[in-house]
Amino acid sequence: MGEALFRLESVDRVYRRGTEELHVLQGLDFQVDKGEFVALMGPSGSGKSTILNIAGGLDRPDLGRVTFEGQDLGDLSEGDLAGWRARNVGFIFQAYNLIPVLTARHNVELPLLLTPLGRRRRREQAELALEVVGIGHRSGHYPKQMSGGEEQRVSIARAIATDPKLLLADEPTGDLDAENAAAILDLLCRLNEENGQTIVMVTHDPNAADRAHRVMHLEKGVLVTEATT
Amino acid sequence: MRFPLRLLIAHLMKNWFRSLLTLISVFVAIAIFGFLRMFIVGMETSLEAAASNKLVTQSAISLFSHLPMRLGQDIADHQEVESSCHWTWFGGIYIDTSPDHIWGRFGCDPDEFRAVYGDEIDLPEEAWQEWRTTKTTCIVGKNVANREKFKVGQTITLEGDLFLGNLDLEIVGIYKSRTRAFDEDTLFMHWDYMNEVSKQNGGRHDRVSTWTILLDDEKNGPTLSARIDAANEASDHRTRTLNMRAFQSQFTSMWGNLPLFFTIIGTIVLVACLMVTANTMFLNARDRVREVGILKTLGFGPKRVMMFTLVESMILCVVGGALGVLAVAPMDGRSMMFVIAAVPPSTFVEGIAIAGLLGLLSGIAPAMMAMRLSIVEAVRKRA
Ligand SMILES: Nc1ncnc2c1ncn2[C@@H]1O[C@H](COP(=O)(O)OP(=O)(O)OP(=O)(O)O)[C@@H](O)[C@H]1O
Ligand SMILES: [Mg+2]
Image (cartoon, rainbow over all chains, first blue to last red):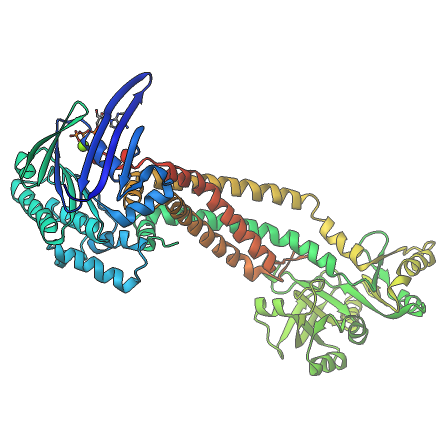
């Protein structure tokens, strides 16, 4: 095992609906090392997104600890956690989640606003990220002028623009056709292989999972290692 | 703190119609506020600016009754009187009786007038000289000149109503006021001329509205006014002598409860406007749940998203408010219904502060919602 990037230790996440309690995660342990590409699979409603959200500091566990490079995220205030996210995590969603009123480039520039970079450097950095995902020529277009595959590329560009240590992708190919899905997977693999980018990806697609180093299966709140390549 | 400024602009543009309506509603509300305020402030400032070394003698019956001209000599004879000047309301018609052509017209004696009011107005020396030497000349205030497009050298005709006969008057000067107590909406001519023409036409004559007295020392005011009034007590022309502030307050008191009424109206308008702006901000917040979730995901913290939401509502309101006060600014110094309207810098500050408060009140709830919004819920499913 390599050096741990983040670790979930005995994590519980409970949703309460009235008096009813839904234990989504119970005593869950999960570690991801630097440079790994991990796929997370499991039936719908099993808590895959919940794990991703907790690892990325979008949600907090009810019990247990989350550490990132040894730092306990539970010690951070909401504001500090946001700053931590800005520096360390890039998110990719199934629904792309681009901001419709901004062009591709301005979408990518958004997280760069939270860095010390000046206006010019932000622009250059955003354009570079768009080049990396192969969509530099569409930088002035709005999300509604693009196909799903293109939108997802822009959202990947936005996620990698600040060069985060961790990339979290929640079913990034879920809304795409086979061809576009393959292209997005190629892109993620390339980022992992060429830049050593740590990636955790939730997917329902076994072919997609095959591209990862490690596939974890989540069932009834328990994680099982399914395969390692 | 860095803001996604471009996003802010994109929002304002995307919802331009909604933004514009909100801006206009704040504009209108603050313009109404400024409009009402300029009368109230105008009354206050003209009273504050009223000279304390001046008295006014008027008829005890009413401000609009006349006194015999000969009384002037008795007044001037008091040793506390530094100088005095009579004013007579000519009234009359210029062109027609529409509000555009209604402004003050008074007859006086130019030399006396200068002795008493020389400090309160600016008029070029040649104008003073020409006015005093030629009986058929007059001077007009800057506002009248602007409104009627009067030029120096022009001759205008006033048709008498209280005093009879037509007066042809050559304008020899345009004066500016140096104080808030003296308006720029008046014409001054020779009393001798209007008196003579009226007499020839069988109209009233040898009558005067008021005397203004310049005191040698302001502390002599109360005793002198008592003495003047006592001297005329038994006559058929009883007088009432007031200090300038009391004299001016007769005009403002004609407004009765209007200032209070104005304050109530102004407040109601502002509250109605708050409903409009708050509604806009709620609509915006509702449209942007996912977007706030995205911003937070990217690392924009709770304070930032709160400020971001607030800034938008503040911008709309403050811009609308600033335009609103700017719209009433040109009314500053205009005399309307016996009051010199005032739009001092403090009204700007008040107007913009109220607009800012509208922005704050209407943006605060959506801003708190944005701050507290759970990211997971916001970005969960496709919109
Ligand atoms: N805010 C919430 N309130 C109540 N229950 C919730 C809430 N968020 C998630 N859940 C429940 O928690 C469980 C896990 O949700 P999660 O989104 O992590 O599942 P998932 O494995 O990502 O599913 P999918 O494959 O459908 O995306 C589900 O049963 C879901 O209904
Ligand atoms: Mg999910």
